[in-house]
Amino acid sequence: MSEIFAAIADPVRRTLIARLHSGEPLSLSALAEGLPITRQAVTKHLNQLQKSGLVRVEWQGRLRLHSLDARPMAEIDAWLAPYSAAWDRRLARLKIRVDGENNHSHKKATMTTTLETEP
Image (cartoon, rainbow, N blue to C red):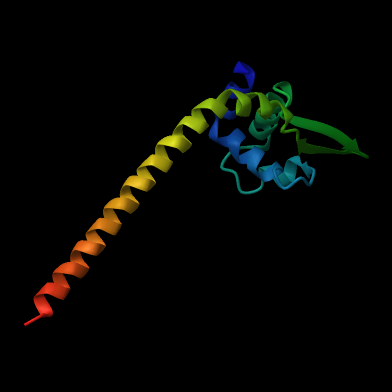
């Protein structure tokens, strides 16, 4: 799991993962397009992603195509699940509290308006 965290820690590698997320295998040229680094640097990042198991490479003639293998992220997802569930519960309680305060304020405003308009 440490290798995956190390791989996704870099913003360039996260950009590459995002580009590969479409599911379509992409060449080095397609992945490097628009990035502020050299193709050689992109290759190094792709090698790191491949080493961590997040990227697969297949040859199509002379062309190397890269694709995302998100299966290693399932381990991270499973590790994060209890924390996500805790945050979901906290946010649900906050929503109930905020909605309750909004309803209370709305009722108060309605009652105040009604009292002020009566002779």
